[in-house]
Length: 73
Image (cartoon, rainbow, N blue to C red):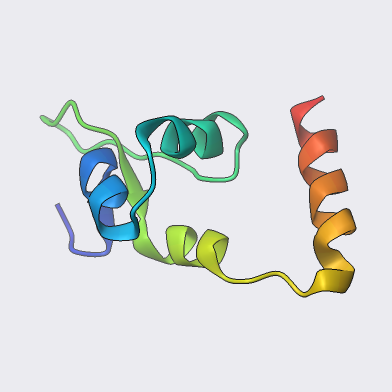
């Protein structure tokens, strides 16, 4: 596995998030998962996870929330 990918367990440990949060982000299409041939684990790109962990300017919170709600619909 290339080092720019994390499996879900490592993602939870390194970024201090719960399993339910990790899978919620994946289910809500905020994170894309990947698989490697011969490996049953799911992986995410580190850069995608870092993007999600970046702060959002206060003026953009309503826009980001609205986009998330529209994507879930």
